[in-house]
Length: 461
Image 1 (cartoon, one colour):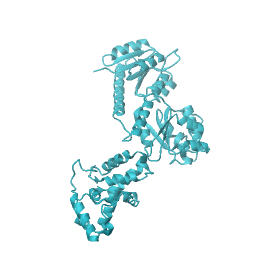
Image 2 (cartoon, rainbow, N blue to C red):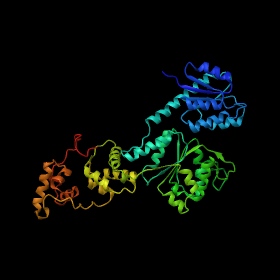
Image 3 (cartoon, rainbow, N blue to C red):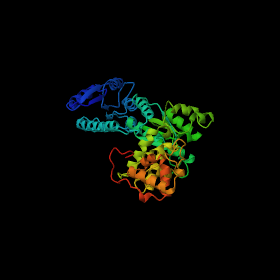
Image 4 (spheres, helix red, strand yellow):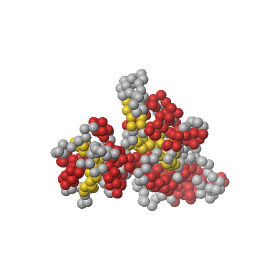
């Protein structure tokens, strides 16, 4: 089995040599005696974990600067601090980073270091497993698949640029943000600017100190600081007030937050993702959104198309939601149901589709979903039959008994399949349903077996 490559970084060559000898039985070791040397190793080698000293006496860069470099450029690489540093401030700063372990140099730390490396490697494998198995944006849309190829290309570039996601409500903007955070192996913290009130927004985002205002009985860490070293998702950024826009701009530019009532800023390391259904260019032109904030957020823009513009996803999501909501219970979905779904405008997009499917499953009493059930779930009237759908017979001239007989004969011929029966009669499925109800024929026609049909039957989930 191939050994994991471990980077040891220390300006004490004695420590490097002894650690390499002791650990090389289990790991492949790469040593570096300066931060610049370590950066070259990270760039050129497949480092799985780094062990870093903090104090590089006489060097321009210390271990803390190397840690921040790894967090920014190689966030997927875990690290361990091995240090006897007496600089309390530097140690405290290091402990704020998401390290695996802090191992103290005490002359008898070899086994502790070995255990810490094993723990870090396990963590690395877990992150790799999550990334590889991962969270996928489920779609059948060629356009969205192409979009996500561009997203993957950006994320694999190690750029830390901000991302703006445009799209109508319900198209999957938050899901896309989760996909990005998962790909990066980082935690996602979200704030929906449409739901946070203007009065509480500053405290929610930036935190506050005790006594900052009436009711501030203790210190509070804001959402931005909670997301330190992760991804911060500003949902519905177009609904953000001018005051908060200014503070967000400072947080993005200076990489720091100022809690309400504090005079000391706090550093944060964040990847920003923003999303909106608004046209930010229009809001900027109207003076409702800051141009400088827009320019900070839209380094890369991805636009999610509306559901009505990707009909292949309507079928796909409808089937997925039926299987998900029914909890394994069988439902027969006939082609007319899918057609009715595709004819709808979907102002609420995927979120609305799920609600409609849930409603349809409740409305059907025969575990069959057709266009009538879909129209009922949508709370709209069935559309009028289009002009080019002409009946094969002139039903207006037939007597009631003859119409009944034609319907029964047609449905007997297709074993009760109403979709096929409508084709035989040359009428729209909604017309056939209306006739069956009008002439009380439900009990006179054969019904399709409720057992699971063969895989060749149309419309089967």
